[in-house]
Image (cartoon, rainbow, N blue to C red; front, side):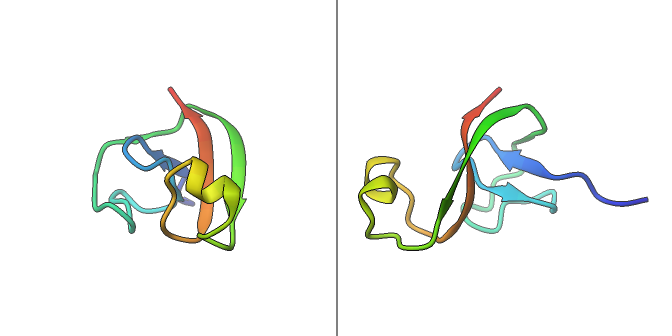
Length: 62
């Protein structure tokens, strides 16, 4: 059985794990809307969303 993609409710990062690799939270959700991919943490988008690590992030987590 394959693992399901989840989103951290704290930092909104996508992960396949039960613990977020960025903020180490275990508060995960499978309900989310919108995706942003951050490659440059100094980009205007990353700064506006307070994202400090490159990766895939949800715009809204339910």
